[in-house]
Amino acid sequence: MGLLSNRVERSEINPGDHIYTYRAVFTYSHHGIYVGGSKVVHFRPERNADSSIEETDSYDSMSSSCPTFPDCGFKLPNSGVTLTCLDCFLGKGSLYCFEYGVAPSVFLVKVRGGTCTTAPSDPPESVIHRAMYLLQNGFGNYDIFQNNCEDFALYCKTGLLIMDKLGVGRSGQASSAVGAPLAAILSSPLKLLMPSPVGVATMTAGMYCMSRYATDIGVRSDVIKVAVEDLHVNLGWAEDHNEEAVERVPSDRLITG
Image 1 (cartoon, rainbow, N blue to C red):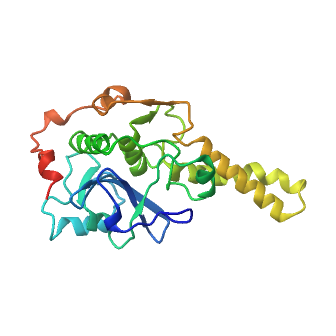
Image 2: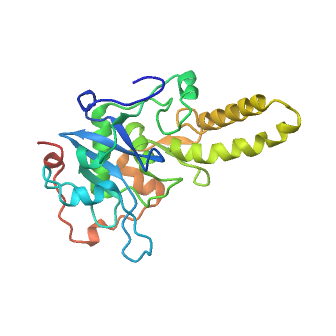
Image 3: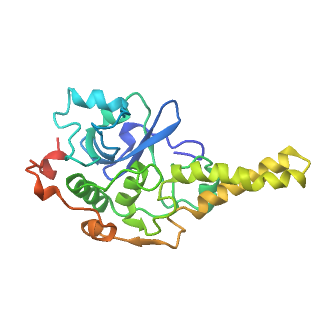
């Protein structure tokens, strides 16, 4: 991995790594936790049968007929946390590895959000435990700005939650989506003071990078460490899995083989 790209080969990733791949010609990235055995736990929007908008992903059709992993696509009803094989997770995309504990200078140089954080990662066994626990218990409702696939992976890696529910979540992608237009708006008055377009562009880029840095979980002051077993209590998610007769696949069978 380097400053320009976090792309890696499959042989370079380890259980507990936060991985991602790009979708829709690099429009956005999809994130998950590699748990070993060529399997990934990730978070995605629930498929809503009553919705007029059909949500599809490249791994939807693949995981339904995966030739190498019989349990590919496993998830509980009313949960977006899904277990798939690495092939189906990537689809036709390349493999990238999210970086943790980067220096502020490195964070600011990586202009695109959703690739790194200044926050340190917990040990791999803790990361995998959180991912497998959430596979069995859910991660609440998917929200593109406050509770998305990157938020899921960041929580699994760090155990950190943002308690301010009015702003963006932990996701670097969400921070970039909000920060870029905000920086453009704030820098608009500078056009009257700076005749040079280069100066305005530089100031806009600086505001964008600083807005990303200010929302990173490694520097925010509104984050707390929460045990995965206490997530439902802290966030008020309804634990209704016991009301349904659901056959849960044992964790040891899911991550071996």
